[in-house]
Structures are given as C-alpha cells and as structure tokens.
Length: 85
Image: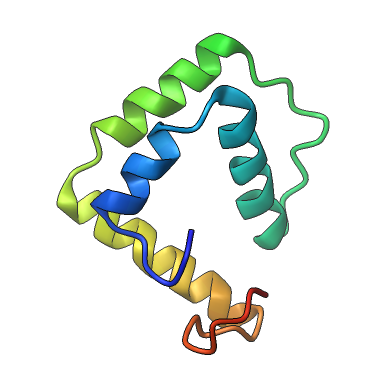
C-alpha cells in the first residue's frame, strides 16, 4: 500500500478483485500477529468488507493510517526508508 494510507489507497483496495483484497487482508492480519488461514471469508463477507471500506469517513481513514504506521513501527519499519517490512 505504499508509505501512506489515504482515500486514494483505499480506492486502490476497493478496485482489487476479491482474491487480491483477501491477500491484502491476510497480509495485514499476519503482520499484526493474526492467523486467518482457518477463517472462511465468503463472497458476502467480502461484500461487507467493501461496504465498510467504501463508507469510511476521513476520521476512519486517519485512524486506519495511524494503526498501519504503529504496526510498521512495531516491525521496525517506519515507512520512510522505502523498504518493506
């Protein structure tokens, strides 16, 4: 997702197909210590994820960005070096 999570990055997520979006969700979960390999996410679940992301307010996006930055710091990657964790 690059160095910054904003409305444009959110749009890129929403433009992904379900398989691509699931991979991103799995990666974010794994980077935060969650194993979703045993979780069955249905097409209806993905539609709900898309609705939630699509209706995110600017404040929601700011909070997501802060959480992503905090996760990067926990992994020792501040997002400024251009390297991916």
